[in-house]
View 1 (tube, rainbow, N blue to C red):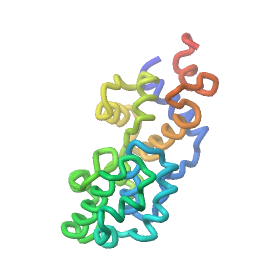
View 2 (cartoon, rainbow, N blue to C red):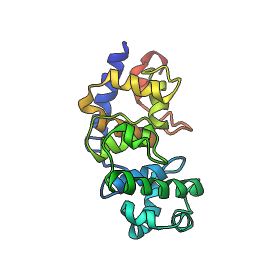
View 3 (cartoon, helix red, strand yellow):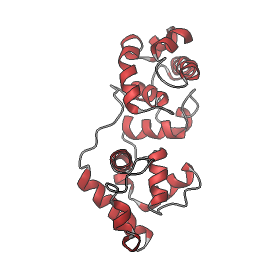
Length: 208
Protein backbone atom coordinates (compact mmCIF):
# COMPACT_ATOMS: atom_id res chain seq x y z
CA UNK A 1 0.00 0.00 0.00
CA UNK A 2 1.39 3.41 -0.98
CA UNK A 3 1.54 6.42 1.31
CA UNK A 4 -1.21 8.11 -0.74
CA UNK A 5 -3.44 5.04 -0.38
CA UNK A 6 -2.90 4.98 3.38
CA UNK A 7 -3.68 8.70 3.57
CA UNK A 8 -6.94 8.11 1.65
CA UNK A 9 -8.00 5.35 4.07
CA UNK A 10 -7.21 7.56 7.07
CA UNK A 11 -9.28 10.42 5.66
CA UNK A 12 -12.25 8.15 4.81
CA UNK A 13 -12.29 6.47 8.23
CA UNK A 14 -12.01 9.75 10.12
CA UNK A 15 -14.82 11.26 8.04
CA UNK A 16 -17.05 8.33 9.08
CA UNK A 17 -16.13 8.80 12.76
CA UNK A 18 -16.24 12.59 12.87
CA UNK A 19 -18.46 14.05 10.13
CA UNK A 20 -18.74 17.19 12.27
CA UNK A 21 -15.80 18.48 14.30
CA UNK A 22 -16.26 21.21 16.90
CA UNK A 23 -13.31 23.48 17.65
CA UNK A 24 -11.99 22.13 21.00
CA UNK A 25 -11.13 25.48 22.57
CA UNK A 26 -13.98 27.78 23.61
CA UNK A 27 -13.69 31.25 22.09
CA UNK A 28 -15.81 33.99 20.52
CA UNK A 29 -13.39 35.59 18.06
CA UNK A 30 -9.85 35.39 16.68
CA UNK A 31 -8.34 37.14 19.72
CA UNK A 32 -9.91 34.87 22.35
CA UNK A 33 -9.00 31.86 20.20
CA UNK A 34 -5.36 32.98 20.02
CA UNK A 35 -5.25 33.47 23.80
CA UNK A 36 -6.79 30.02 24.39
CA UNK A 37 -4.33 28.32 22.03
CA UNK A 38 -1.38 30.11 23.65
CA UNK A 39 -2.61 28.88 27.03
CA UNK A 40 -3.00 25.30 25.79
CA UNK A 41 0.74 24.61 25.45
CA UNK A 42 1.64 21.64 27.68
CA UNK A 43 -1.85 21.48 29.19
CA UNK A 44 -5.21 20.05 28.12
CA UNK A 45 -7.92 21.85 26.17
CA UNK A 46 -10.34 20.84 28.92
CA UNK A 47 -8.25 22.67 31.52
CA UNK A 48 -7.98 25.75 29.31
CA UNK A 49 -11.77 25.80 28.84
CA UNK A 50 -12.17 25.73 32.63
CA UNK A 51 -9.90 28.75 33.09
CA UNK A 52 -10.78 31.03 30.14
CA UNK A 53 -14.34 32.02 31.21
CA UNK A 54 -13.05 33.92 34.26
CA UNK A 55 -10.14 35.35 32.22
CA UNK A 56 -12.38 36.49 29.35
CA UNK A 57 -14.94 37.95 31.78
CA UNK A 58 -12.20 40.42 32.73
CA UNK A 59 -10.11 40.64 29.56
CA UNK A 60 -11.66 39.50 26.28
CA UNK A 61 -9.98 42.22 24.17
CA UNK A 62 -6.33 43.24 23.71
CA UNK A 63 -7.07 46.63 25.36
CA UNK A 64 -8.48 45.03 28.51
CA UNK A 65 -5.68 42.44 28.70
CA UNK A 66 -2.99 45.09 28.25
CA UNK A 67 -4.38 47.04 31.22
CA UNK A 68 -4.01 44.08 33.58
CA UNK A 69 -0.75 43.49 35.42
CA UNK A 70 1.18 40.27 34.86
CA UNK A 71 0.29 39.28 38.43
CA UNK A 72 -3.43 39.81 37.78
CA UNK A 73 -3.29 37.68 34.63
CA UNK A 74 -1.29 35.01 36.43
CA UNK A 75 -3.88 34.86 39.22
CA UNK A 76 -6.63 34.25 36.63
CA UNK A 77 -4.72 31.42 34.89
CA UNK A 78 -2.83 29.98 37.87
CA UNK A 79 -4.36 26.50 37.45
CA UNK A 80 -2.63 26.14 34.09
CA UNK A 81 0.96 24.95 33.73
CA UNK A 82 3.64 27.56 32.97
CA UNK A 83 1.24 30.27 34.18
CA UNK A 84 4.10 32.66 34.94
CA UNK A 85 5.56 32.79 31.44
CA UNK A 86 2.10 32.58 29.85
CA UNK A 87 0.88 35.58 31.86
CA UNK A 88 3.91 37.62 30.70
CA UNK A 89 3.29 36.56 27.11
CA UNK A 90 -0.43 37.42 27.22
CA UNK A 91 0.31 40.94 28.50
CA UNK A 92 3.06 41.52 25.93
CA UNK A 93 0.93 40.04 23.13
CA UNK A 94 -1.94 42.39 24.05
CA UNK A 95 0.32 45.45 24.23
CA UNK A 96 1.77 44.80 20.77
CA UNK A 97 -1.69 44.14 19.32
CA UNK A 98 -2.88 47.50 20.67
CA UNK A 99 0.23 49.49 19.68
CA UNK A 100 1.15 47.91 16.36
CA UNK A 101 -2.04 46.33 15.02
CA UNK A 102 -4.77 48.68 16.36
CA UNK A 103 -6.12 45.79 18.49
CA UNK A 104 -6.90 43.69 15.39
CA UNK A 105 -5.49 40.17 15.17
CA UNK A 106 -3.34 40.06 12.01
CA UNK A 107 -4.01 37.56 9.25
CA UNK A 108 -0.50 36.57 8.18
CA UNK A 109 1.83 33.96 9.68
CA UNK A 110 4.71 36.43 9.86
CA UNK A 111 2.73 38.99 11.85
CA UNK A 112 1.06 36.41 14.09
CA UNK A 113 4.39 34.74 14.89
CA UNK A 114 5.85 38.14 15.83
CA UNK A 115 3.50 38.19 18.85
CA UNK A 116 4.65 36.97 22.28
CA UNK A 117 3.64 33.38 22.97
CA UNK A 118 2.60 32.70 19.36
CA UNK A 119 4.61 30.00 17.61
CA UNK A 120 3.89 28.45 14.23
CA UNK A 121 1.34 25.96 15.58
CA UNK A 122 -0.66 28.67 17.38
CA UNK A 123 -0.51 30.88 14.27
CA UNK A 124 -1.73 27.94 12.15
CA UNK A 125 -4.69 27.33 14.47
CA UNK A 126 -5.67 31.02 14.33
CA UNK A 127 -5.34 31.09 10.53
CA UNK A 128 -7.38 27.89 10.22
CA UNK A 129 -10.02 28.08 12.96
CA UNK A 130 -10.09 31.85 13.41
CA UNK A 131 -10.00 33.03 9.80
CA UNK A 132 -10.77 29.94 7.71
CA UNK A 133 -7.51 29.91 5.74
CA UNK A 134 -6.28 26.41 4.76
CA UNK A 135 -3.77 25.36 7.42
CA UNK A 136 -2.60 22.12 9.01
CA UNK A 137 -1.55 22.83 12.61
CA UNK A 138 0.47 19.88 13.92
CA UNK A 139 0.20 19.02 17.61
CA UNK A 140 1.69 16.05 19.45
CA UNK A 141 -1.30 13.79 18.59
CA UNK A 142 -0.96 14.49 14.85
CA UNK A 143 2.83 14.14 14.90
CA UNK A 144 2.62 10.83 16.76
CA UNK A 145 -0.21 9.34 14.69
CA UNK A 146 1.21 10.34 11.30
CA UNK A 147 4.49 8.72 12.30
CA UNK A 148 2.64 5.61 13.46
CA UNK A 149 0.67 5.48 10.19
CA UNK A 150 3.97 5.89 8.27
CA UNK A 151 2.71 9.04 6.57
CA UNK A 152 5.77 11.02 7.65
CA UNK A 153 9.34 10.29 8.66
CA UNK A 154 8.35 12.20 11.80
CA UNK A 155 11.70 13.82 12.58
CA UNK A 156 9.92 17.01 13.69
CA UNK A 157 6.57 18.79 13.47
CA UNK A 158 7.77 20.97 10.57
CA UNK A 159 8.33 17.89 8.40
CA UNK A 160 5.07 16.36 9.57
CA UNK A 161 3.16 19.50 8.58
CA UNK A 162 4.82 19.55 5.16
CA UNK A 163 4.06 15.86 4.59
CA UNK A 164 0.42 16.30 5.65
CA UNK A 165 -0.02 19.18 3.22
CA UNK A 166 1.46 17.08 0.41
CA UNK A 167 -0.76 14.07 1.15
CA UNK A 168 -4.14 15.74 1.47
CA UNK A 169 -5.90 18.40 -0.57
CA UNK A 170 -5.95 21.80 1.12
CA UNK A 171 -9.78 21.78 1.03
CA UNK A 172 -9.76 19.19 3.87
CA UNK A 173 -6.85 20.49 5.98
CA UNK A 174 -8.90 22.55 8.45
CA UNK A 175 -11.25 19.69 9.23
CA UNK A 176 -8.81 16.80 8.97
CA UNK A 177 -6.28 18.10 11.48
CA UNK A 178 -9.09 18.26 14.06
CA UNK A 179 -10.35 14.79 13.10
CA UNK A 180 -6.87 13.34 13.71
CA UNK A 181 -6.69 15.07 17.12
CA UNK A 182 -10.10 13.65 18.10
CA UNK A 183 -9.07 10.17 16.95
CA UNK A 184 -5.84 10.38 18.93
CA UNK A 185 -7.68 11.32 22.11
CA UNK A 186 -10.47 8.77 21.78
CA UNK A 187 -8.91 5.78 20.02
CA UNK A 188 -5.14 6.07 20.23
CA UNK A 189 -3.89 7.87 23.37
CA UNK A 190 -0.12 8.12 23.83
CA UNK A 191 -0.14 5.32 26.41
CA UNK A 192 -1.85 3.10 23.82
CA UNK A 193 -5.18 1.35 23.40
CA UNK A 194 -4.70 -1.55 21.02
CA UNK A 195 -8.33 -2.68 21.31
CA UNK A 196 -9.84 0.58 20.08
CA UNK A 197 -7.01 1.78 17.83
CA UNK A 198 -8.26 0.28 14.55
CA UNK A 199 -6.66 2.45 11.84
CA UNK A 200 -3.20 0.79 12.04
CA UNK A 201 -4.91 -2.59 11.50
CA UNK A 202 -6.46 -1.27 8.29
CA UNK A 203 -3.21 0.26 7.07
CA UNK A 204 -0.96 -2.66 7.99
CA UNK A 205 -3.17 -5.80 7.90
CA UNK A 206 -0.16 -8.13 7.76
CA UNK A 207 0.91 -6.86 11.22
CA UNK A 208 -2.54 -7.06 12.80
